[in-house]
Image (cartoon, rainbow, N blue to C red):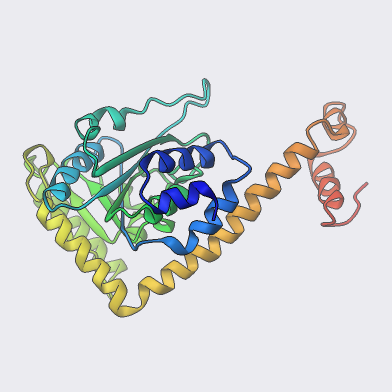
Length: 314
């Protein structure tokens, strides 16, 4: 076994930090380490926290960490923040909000920027979760950038996906346009001390009646006031009930199989794109495009031909 993989399994936190850096920096040993850690997962409950910006996800996660630690559970956190398309940097604000947990040996926080990835997660989030599971955390929390119209990748990582909403956030139909009705395993109405909670609950229930009326599992709704530590027990119990449903129904095994199958294509896609960018960096097609001698489709077809894919275009 690779020395770093061995140390991660043995719960060396420095090795875990270094291993995640290997992922982010695309180290040559990355795939070797991931292969050796694949069967070393300890079965952590992976909970995704998503929702629109301003819903209070970070505050909720911060208080939820306190709650889980009171039950002597160890927690790994992956907090994803958006990367600037101009500077390439990211303000890791979630890490600032969770600063009180830095000295707790039972908590490990890893912040990462999206680095241009769509879907609400960083490119290496799924692989980071794999490493954390091999390390042996009881619970892994993944906080996404926030729900837009396409930020749904959390469903490919988490066992239980919690969608955080709050009253007064606008027309709930607009929120559900993002597709979160399909990915939500649990709805959390945060800031439940604000007016409009009953209206929001009625709207969610009405949408569930339409979309989940014949489903085997109907996502429950929890109300929280994270700043007052209220409702966190309900969130935990509902998340555990969902995990129990996954295990008893066989849905969990089916879901994990789909995730692994998707991951094969994701790895192939990334490695293929990396090879194309490296091999074609100084290709003639750039100058030909600039001189308008060929169109983008012809250039793409010719690149594929060099990879033994497709046919010659003129």
